[in-house]
Image 1: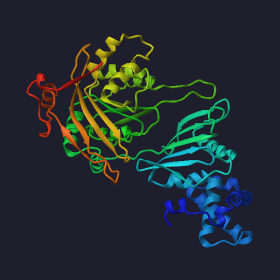
Image 2 (image 1 turned 30 degrees about the vertical axis):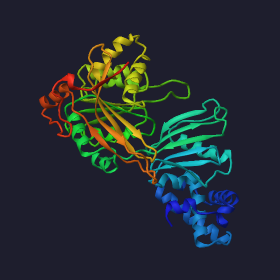
Image 3 (image 1 turned 60 degrees about the vertical axis):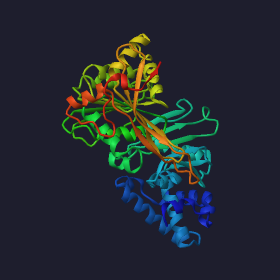
Length: 444
């Protein structure tokens, strides 16, 4: 039986009485095992031992069950004793990208960009809290009324957010975001995120050390694209990644990964993204990659991009290229250094070369919505030149988003820079004969 089938199968007798059978046999199992001996085993050996002991218990005193029901009960009891209970199969399912627990009786998952509710539930708030406490304890954190919010990364890579009453009025709430696997650019082409012409352009821009901002809304695939773009960086370069929760999986050999740290229970020891960006400048980087700028570190990142650290990459949460520039300006103003907005515009104009705007469509697919060049300089109003845009066709009855990518000439300055870096201009784009032939739009 497939994992998905096992999750969605209607209740049988073992499952229907799970609220009594599972805790009963979990208690019996814990009575018969030697915890000291178990601690010396590997996770796989520990699970095998528990399943074997529980099998003996069921044979000796258990209810009459079919083979399928018996296997299901053993799995649930061992998951409760060893893992995360009913969440364990979801974490093993590679198709699940996000798990959302809204209180004990509402569990949702995201698969292929679509959210669905599952017929699963925790027995009580207490059982859900036990699962939450088990999760946060693996990263030496605690959650209680004095610390009702936790945002952390598990040792296996998943990002976890917890918020409990009194802040959450729907009961304990748990969100687990799966560690995104690294996609190659060729795989993203297969998924329809971009096409071969866009790959040629982005490859040239990254190798020619253009500073690239990847922009998009939540769940648009910013980290996935950033990871794929980083694969275009030459192997010999020294790369430093700075992230709030480490998700990037760079394949190059000369990579230093930095991750921020929250304060401890005494409220001390916090290391921010800004601290790490500042420190990275002292580490002789060829490239700096910031997972997401969301505060005062934006100013430090912009200064790094405009003072010799060309070819840097970052993501920002925004719904359009214009919004991305406005958000960068607002975030940079959150720095403890007071900088006039006009000076921030100067910083952004000199630092940002390219904005890649991502969008998540109604069918769950993620596509590059637009590639934009920033052509303004100094304190000019932002001038954006769109060189690629996705044109969606009207939605048909199958609800699948279809369309085509349209291309426009690159600014002359961009073409010249690619040429002097030894990179070719993709024929689908070409180069505008002069700046005045470009169609630009302003972002104020």
